[in-house]
Length: 364
Image 1: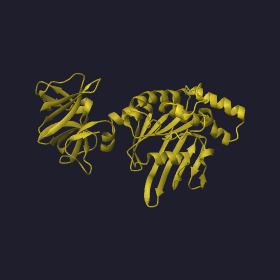
Image 2 (image 1 turned 180 degrees about the vertical axis):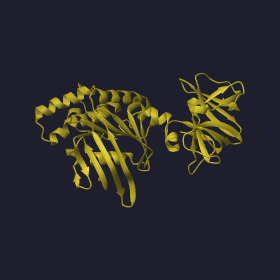
Image 3 (image 1 turned 45 degrees about the horizontal axis):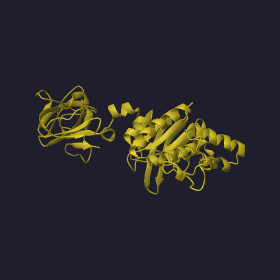
């Protein structure tokens, strides 16, 4: 049975439409990331599922139980929906101990004291903080506070948990560790999860599926690999990962191959949409897919290596030439000098140009 079903959800603030008919489902045990830029509607969507926002139209179901149905005037209160919710801000009471923070929602529901104690201990044990119940929030690290907020959501023992930017308050190193820990916890507990994030790497590492939102609609729904390697639109391609971008015009089409001319250079790429000769296009190639050689050849551009920046596990290499700047990665530092830079045909993704096209540059 599907855990969450969203059907035709629309939500407006006055004349401003935030959600424009969003539909999707979350399967049992699945982690789904709501990914998008600021203003895309991802947080509003999560809050609507939680019952903190009221849509104008559509349905929200938990299994076969309706949480919201605009036509039938059903709109369950947040506390009756049976969902765990973790906010971006941990919202811990500073004057209450960890155990008191975690157990407070149960006390509001008049759960017996003995049951509260056992369920709080079980929740704290599940997140590795079983021995810290008597500490106060200020005595915990940021990562530990984040776990306490998660335990407070788990103490309900819900089947579904909603997470709103749960790792955003952690530093970069701790975020890397926390997303591994969080995915394992959700998986081991057999939960379904809907997680809002604006971080592409976090979404790919944490989720089984990504819903990429754009302007209140789902731009693409798929696995992290599908959206990264097979984006269905220029927006999806630019949003996921860092890419070199080249604007040009289609000179010839042969099957799914498109020959384009940009800055006077002829390149062949993989057409991601139906294109015709003369169409203005934008071509993207991921930084890690750019190759180079000391020899000239088909599809290669003579360029000069101007920088090789040490990043720890790799170097970021910058090439310039023909009024172009191209970035890529290398395991070792690359000496300055002339090289022949190549955009592999299968990795040069060619899309019909959208409004606001730019000259060659790097997205992200």
